[in-house]
Image (cartoon, rainbow over all chains, first blue to last red; front, top):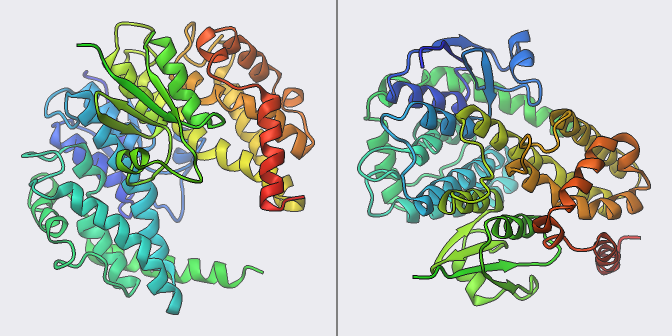
Length: 225
Length: 219
């Protein structure tokens, strides 16, 4: 286990931060290689030729992309501070909700952030629906992992910081404390935990990035026939 | 206490087929229930309230949803027979990566081939062939994606093979012409009883697509 660990990540990428949190929780030393998602270096094309995205974990020279795949790899390689529960049905549930959060919740939030005018109200519907499912899942628990944070907490760990920024830049309110009290409380608890609280992107950086991204993305759809 | 296993399924679903293969690989007895996807049963709605989709595995009353998650669950619970995932963490991650790649690409692209026309269809064909070539490259000279043994990635991809004839007919192209090693691999997989007993006849799938196209008004 003394092999070198590198993480190719980006300060704007919520997927990168999941990996940093996992490595720090497990006390794994790693070298962080900073990528700019707007200006990808040859390193990304070398280590992730299929998707050309961050994050990529490089362990002993072997590379691994896709954040949820990386999280499971980290959990299986460094067995201290386990992220996934031992029971197979609970593991399946954690994987199910992580997949749901990425494929439904995050996409819905993204669509709502991009939408304008009348379309925005309509686009917020699926995002609110998906948050309602997560609210139900966290109800009665301090963290998705139980008493301690786990795989699913890391997977939805974008909610406290990134959702807040997307709401501001996208002119919308999704995570309402009254509508989603348990999820709201979870978010407040999550960002207080070490090493999460010491490892968050600077808010201004995220605001600036998502603001320019919105202008760019909207210009792309305006130019479509 | 004997395990009670039920699978909520639909005969033409590549995702349902994956679970069938895994259950047979592990030698498990189960009850299969065919859902009417136009009239979903209260059981399906109760067991998968989030997506209301099949397949759903119900093991001793507890539901597991999403085919790659179900297959991994089956592999973990019945770990002593026919392991589908390797033991080495890097190889396991590699397998999960490729299963995820298959899930993100093949279904949508294949679907576009039989539902679209003109440029849209051509673009989908081109992209599907690129993806299949990438997968063929990943297979390399190995008998299976899992190496010497049939594994997780094999289960994830082989279920699309019974849909290839439909894609080829409606897209007017040949997958074998460009990916002969991949087609050879599908034939190798079909020699396994778990696969041959879980996949329907490609002609039946083709006829089903003909019906769907009529229903959706696609010429």
